[in-house]
Length: 342
Image (cartoon, rainbow, N blue to C red; front, side):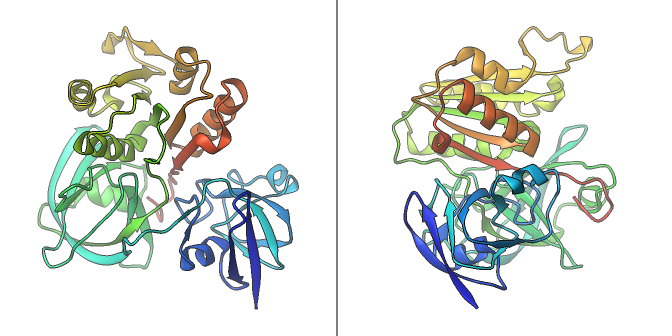
């Protein structure tokens, strides 16, 4: 059985099958809704059901709480329709012509960027053209049928490889393999590109980028693409970490200030040890942003980090700094420490 889904305020409509998620049905009809993890963990697709009934599938209880559900919210990546629906989704676009592919790749380079971050470069097959938009991610396809998602960190212009930032997760099977066993020339398989996180280049508003930890990866792709295409919009990056080692490509970012007119970098450490001799900004990255830019009514914010960071930044920036809700774009990621994840 299928039901009609209407998105507001755009008025766009599509048919959604009762045995598919709302997100899957939207993507199948060429509509790109905000999403990232597709398994109910990140919260990027959280939307308000204005009318109708859904069945909420398996998800993280911390991502969609009982209070959220009582308030009419649902996770579209794991909710299925049980009637015609009207859903509030403010960021909707039509999917482009970039195909999603399943491809093999070869490990080209592994670089230990910090004690718990490896920069992994994978060589794309010469026989297959792979396109992506700065900000998107790929899924590694594992032998047991499971997937691990990582954002692409390099710009799409002329790329014959992909750069990925892998943070080690204690007990994580895939990340442990990357840190302890993966070597150059090993073969992996992936599917992509995936995700809706991308720079909206039809706007002239100043851009604020907000990254936490390895949430820096898609931000790096966006900035390097901006450099390659000659983007002239003002752009400020707030990159937060506990300590200086967490800003694992600090020098690369400093170099962008010379290469991209109007670009500014604000590093922020929340728990720097005395050995870092840190004299820069301290606390939470989005708090530093609020102190610098108390009026965000004319800006766009692109944020990537943990779901908790994204939720806090969205609430504070829209409620206290005048940022329009539709001008907050996010990519959230979550880690699990069980042996079957990460």
